[in-house]
Length: 267
Ligand code: HEC
Ligand code: HEC
Image (cartoon, rainbow, N blue to C red; front, side, top):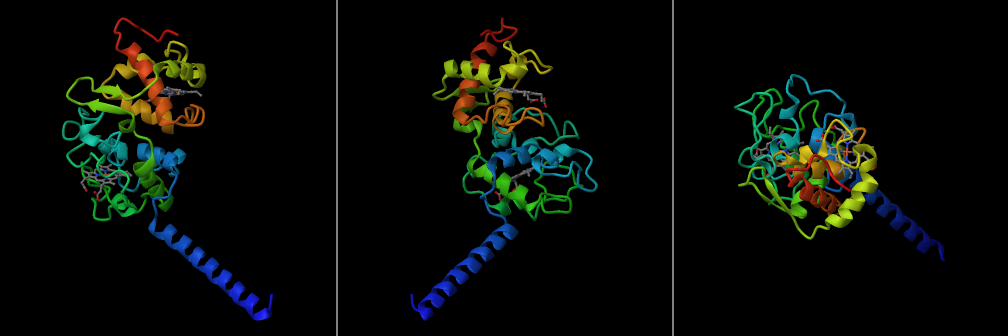
């Protein structure tokens, strides 16, 4: 290779590298939706927790954490007032947690939500505790990574709406799982859940059969199986399941929970 050609080649590589680096910096500053949707599911639950990348402290002046949690207004399923949280008690009946209102159903937006929609810079201040969307960029708010991750959760993270239709006119909310395979769900339960929850689902403080009989709980259960419930029950220890596998387990649980004579699962 002659010298001038080699030099031009080197220059080209250098320019490409600089542009590449620059675009990386810019996307870090403005946020992108290329985050980690699984961490985003933990942010959705409670972004102030260290397990979700938070500091374990509430922002200055905040008294009730539920006015900060995405799921408290938008529901576990992001269907807000049209999902599992349709009968969620709260403001104005209770002043410690918000009540999902019109506008909290995000299902028509999933797949095209921008980080700016999440940041909501024109939103309310932390200390005005009401049903309105807070400005999440205030002091003590989300990190850029958390904003990226929760945007990715909204756009591509599994939701129960992917695998079930939800009828909120029934009480408890009626979930119909699409193409679910309860027989494989039974095997998966034995493999991924039984060690901690027991064959009957009653080994721990939370009794799974009673849990799922409560209003709207398949939305919460699905979220916690896929994304994790807390430091003990993480996504990894629950088997890194996908939506179809979770649907199998939930449909197997449902057959038994709907039988009101049962006090636990039978294998
Ligand atoms: C106290 C209730 C509340 C909390 C907490 C809350 N939101 Fe919202 N959010 C709303 C309401 C109400 C709307 C619709 C009206 C509006 O745009 O303000 C909304 C709208 C949105 C939208 C759509 C914005 C648009 O431009 O269309 C997104 C995305 C969103 N929220 C994401 C989140 C995320 C992510 C979190 C948690 C980090 C969160 N929200 C926390 C109440 C809340
Ligand atoms: C390593 C032990 C472990 C495994 C494995 C495990 N869990 Fe859990 N699970 C827990 C613990 C601990 C809790 C209590 C956490 C809490 O309530 O915050 C819990 C809570 C739950 C809850 C209630 C969450 C809530 O709202 O509080 C459900 C539902 C659940 N598990 C279902 C499952 C299913 C289904 C599987 C299998 C796919 C599974 N778990 C696997 C330990 C485990």
